Every structure is written in structure tokens, then in C-alpha cells.
Length: 211
Image (cartoon, rainbow, N blue to C red):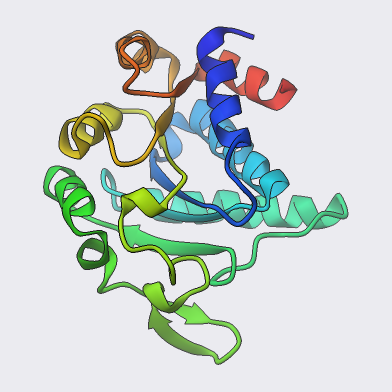
């Protein structure tokens, strides 16, 4: 394995059981050949860690549904493998799409509860839609500092926007899974320590799955 992919895997493996991970999933079907495998690998590592997660998109309104489809398929595969599928509300929160990524990223860094506070999600136990911060995933999360890791799966330059808006040092460690053509640009952020790990293209997927 190459160092940046190994560093990404180590960062994910250090998430404690029950720790909250934020996933920015900013890809659509145009890059599914690379991005889908990356997102599946991220989900699988989180399953092994028994971590909780939040996912959203700030780049394309189609991206949340694409991620939901990946998660639905993965849950079915996990059940076939005799493993526990992810439970909505209890183990993950779907925040959907947020327009204007630049201002949204700044709002996450400034006031996370305000940035996500208007979102609701079904609670299977009561069959009602409740504010996401009432969920077991986010009940103790008040800022990005309360999250263990920020993962970006993207086919664009999203990590650069987040790095700029989150400031240095960031409130939360960040890793990225990018397509092959975006690899060289993001390698600079890894080298500078602004990304704690990096998976690039098909090779990155193979390395993540191998580890």
C-alpha cells in the first residue's frame, strides 16, 4: 500500500466504538466507477468499528440519493454476510443536500447545530419525524470537535473548500477519497498535513479493501 492510503485506513481504524464520523458524499453516477467503491469501503470500515455517522452533500442535489442507494445495497450485502446492517436514526443520520457549499462549510465550522438544526429524520421507534439532534447519533454533538473524523468522498475539489473554511488547524481530522484525475491536486493537501489520509481512484479502493 502507498503511505497516503495507509494513513487514511489508520485514521478510520482509530475511530472509537460509537464515535461519530461526518461523511461528505459529493459524487454522482458519472464517477461511480471509482467513488461508489470508495464509499462502500468507508462504510465497511465504519461497520467494523461500530461507529456512527452522518452523511450529506453540498455539491450536487442528486448526490444524497446516490449515497442512499449505496447504503441500501451495502446493508443487504451485510445481512447476507451475517453482519449487522446500519440502522437509520440509531447509527446514522441522513442530512440530505445543502446548497452553496462555501457558506455551508463555514456555518458548520462556526455553529454546527445551526447548520444542521433544521433537518429532521424518521425515528423508526415512534414512526415520527424528529430533529436530527435528538437522534442517538447527534445527541451529544455540539460542534465539529465532538466528531472523530470528517470523510469526503468526491469527484471534485470539495476538500479544498472545506479546508479553507474550517481553518488551520481544523476542528476535526479530515481524510478524502477522490477520483484518479483529482489525486495529484489532493496529494498536496496530504503532504501539507491538511488531509490525514487520501485514497485515489481504483488503486485506492483496492488498497482500502485489502487493508
